[in-house]
Length: 334
Image (spheres, rainbow, N blue to C red):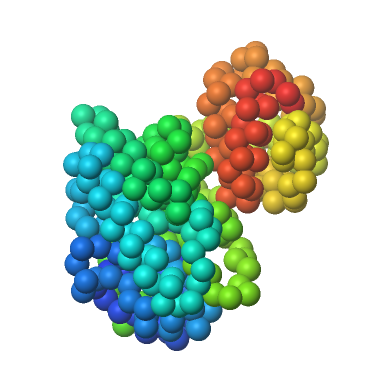
């Protein structure tokens, strides 16, 4: 089960070569292309030129083999060094200056990671971090639990989640979401992706291009059954009180000095989307949320409630703001 059903605004492909004009006509804004030790599937300079000239952004994704991340630190460091050399050669050929940390390189954990394999995967991304040597941001492609785990440990800066092995859960950390594999578009075999945080992806965008849109619609299949139950409870709390809750979220986010200037209009839209799923309308949303957090109104854990809210609003807010909202909820700020 995927956490998004709808049209793609990004695709990824390896050995196939899509018709770029047909991609543009299909509304594709971003292409994730491979870097590896296999030249036949790699992004080329000429291909990059055509994509950028057509107004399509490029995401750099290294994957030499699906299970490579099982091999630990040394493999990660080697892959990162090779990826840096390849990306630098492409950027130089395209006449870009190498600006540290402007772009990201993603590395794949393209398998269902077991608990036993998780330490090796962490070590692989420690190697990636060191191998990137501060030139590029570290990205991960993988299932929801891997995305969450690596992000929480500071091993990745940007995250591309796949629906595979994720059980219908969309991580609040995901910046790009792969929701359907094995599709045919623009004459190529591609996977469908949804952009969530375009400005945070670390993609190579065409000159003058400002990423627009993004965000994942709130749908019936967006979350696991447990998450959806929490969202339904939130909906019951805020059904006719969206302005009140939005102002509370504004105040909570405003408590973080570094976030004061953030535009929270998207938050209010997300609150309304949550509210539209509600089936009841308490008179005083502030009192209801406080009661919920204290466990006296509905039987829900405060941290779980905050996580559900953060997941719901993260599609329209930078991750830092979503995290601040969640932390404020846990602390009872609303």
